[in-house]
Length: 157
Image (tube, rainbow, N blue to C red; front, side):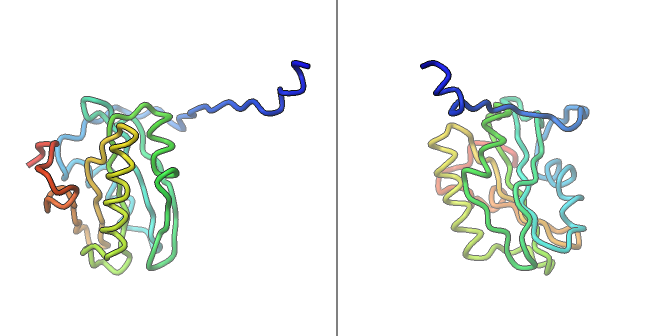
């Protein structure tokens, strides 16, 4: 009788692809320097999530989705899966705009609100959502005080 349930067991495991020097992200510019340099070269929209521990040390960077030239759809469960596995305390969400215009669309704003709410439920803070342009410019929801309606808890500025 014991063996009949064996096929339903699953195991979840985090696999680190490389060992890199642990970097601390102290401000928005640090975050953009580390992840943004990759995104500004992309010809399609990419969604990347940086996982941070309690001291804002970078514990992982995950490419969650690759979209088309104008959108990169991803669901909250996909965005938070890696953060849960890496025991992250917070995340920074990045995506690029291939047009170079970093101003957020209505979909970007709605997705940020949805991610913030999901993070609140999971106990993983969404520290920022950063849109990176092709020419090195960026838009930070946290910097513009648009990550949440209350005062930002991250004290970057």
